[in-house]
Image (cartoon, rainbow, N blue to C red; front, side):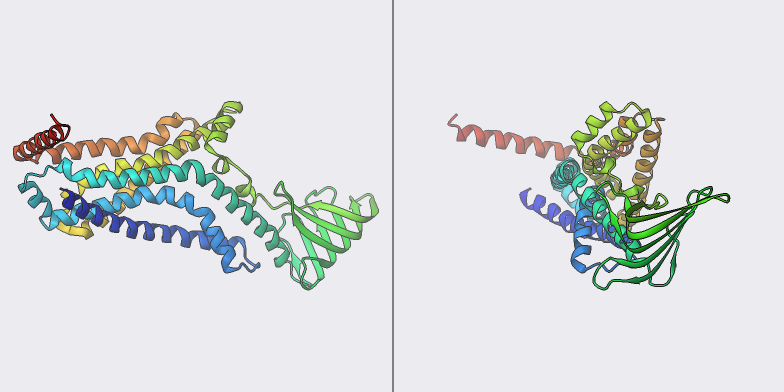
Length: 385
């Protein structure tokens, strides 16, 4: 049995690594596209890009580890069933439940790793990633401000820059039309200016040596300034970078949920709490579902397992998104909303496990009993009985 356990564990582990690599690659490529869009006009080094990918990797791993366990188990058992290896094991008296031991070993280890990432690492990575992106966004606006061109990416505002100081972010000869207040537009001219991001994640245009013209159709007034700070409206594009529930630790989530009075905010915080627990536990549930289900698709071998695995991933993802949406809106309790995918998949797993177990036959039970008696006898003799 040890040889058999090593063989099954090795097969699943290889496919687990391959599945995890493919799923991570898909998510990383999508995130690289996001980073490219957010940092357009601002060169980003290879080292900075690698750091950003590392920051967001814990969040990806928490999602992909359970799915990789599902794919690896499903493909392995589908292939073994197609090659009649499962039949041979049963003919030798090995029950289906005994075959599950290496599967549960991998699923348990993957679940513990995912739980550690979810509770202790994920929020740190999210915070570092969003913080870094926020810095790039502020630099992006500076880079996008071209010399002698009109820049209108700030809502209601048009900026014209006469030139840039080489090697710095200092803008020379700044002209700004601020029409955000339609009743009182402003014209601002300044000798120089710098766009900066503040600790509160706002973007401020710091202007030096200029004049401001403000008023309406009836009257205007002129004001000369040495230094002036103008808060720029980013049109809500930076809302995703404000520290939210994804950047809070599990303890902070519980504290915030107990403190806030707004029901919708509390639901959101509680949904995030249960999500961080439910996703790691899905490793065990999906493995228990994939193993007996793999026996049903043996005609397609490994390819059949891949197709069914993709379908199960889609179903699990839809249930997760559906539950999360209803939980945040308060239509379902956060506990049920986030554990619903595991509940549905667990019920399916129980049905398929029961069916697979009934096919094991009485010979497997007899051999298991004989092995148990033999181990008990050896233990008794060893203790000097």
